[in-house]
Amino acid sequence: MKKINVYLSVMASAFALHTADVFASKLKTEMYGPSAMASSEPFEMRQRPTEKAEFSAYIDYLVDVADPRSTEQLKEDDVIKKRFKKTMIVDSLWVGGPGFPAGFSAELYDKAMTHSIENNYNVVSATITNAGKPDTPAVVRQRMIDTNKHWADQPEKYLQVRTVDDFYKAKKQGRLGVFHNFQGMMPLSQSGDEQEALANLSEFYELGMRQLMFTYNIDTPYSDGGVSNSDGTDQGVHKAGFAVIKEANRLGIALDCSHSSNQTCIEAATASDKPIMLSHSNADIFQPIDRNASAQAIQAVAASGGVICVNFIGGFLNPQGDASPFQIAKHVEYIRNLTGPEHVCAGSDYVWNYADTLLWILNNPKDFPVEMGYATPSHMGKPSEMWGVARVLKETYNWSDEEIAGFLGENLVRFYNTVWVD
Image (tube, rainbow, N blue to C red):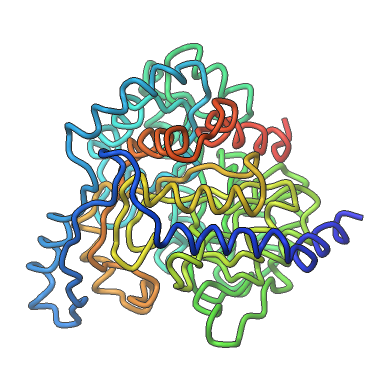
């Protein structure tokens, strides 16, 4: 029955899709909202270089234009922060950890996490690997062990989350709840060997991994990635991927199809016995790149009972690279109209070691295609932009407090509570 429901939701939702498309067309032309939430001033869309001699100056430029709002504009969010002080605030995708690629140090990690704490976040899903070739099972295992120790060594600041009960414990105690996510299945087994993958999946679960993405853009033995969305080769979930879905359901691991192909999302939503998620994906109607999700993929995830969390990266939001809260809210409102308010959330996807990450991206163009918006002139919205988005939803789109609370984190609490097994 579940598979029939997912199929019917994706294939027989022409009216909802038409309504959302009309809304999207209107948003592209309407006047901007209140002052602090209007689109930001445009900046030069410089071409991404391929010559190493040009990298340094280009990186400096990208860092210079990265902030979507001024300090003064951010202060305007203080009132709405107080309004939702009792709400569970959750970031479904936060990038980095001690020893993470591109020089992510323990000191930077703590500084970055402090930003989330100061902006009232209660729980953060932190990426421990983006599943690149250097991240073998052994490398990721040790990084998890080291990060778990880092959390345990600062019990006044961090609480490692293993169950949803820990969300409430962290909030009550004034600590930041943190748990591991993987941005890809390749660290389970780089060859796609099912026996190895399932054994490692169980071990990584014991170490605290609670969220697992199919792939980071590329086609793998587990599924096709976003690179296959537009070239006619999208084959969705592969045999090893279906085996992982079944075991992740048994263990209680949230399956995530961000960065993956649209067909992967649709097939995973059908195959999974539990809801799945798009942890940090935007709608391709506003920015038609392979990194973003189609309406059909979004609807499939929602039909599984899952959630769709928008990210705050300008290059994934629109061709102008604008990550002002007003632009982020366009995606949130579009997804809400397509699926319902209970399915929307946020995954900031902010990269704190931005300059080092840009150099890493420029040196690995096949892993980070320019066609997907990587290392292009863009705002990089910090987790604090969540509050500006909440203001737009309230002041421009007339969301109720209950709906905004869902977006801020309560929808994710409900999702994880359904998926995770104590």
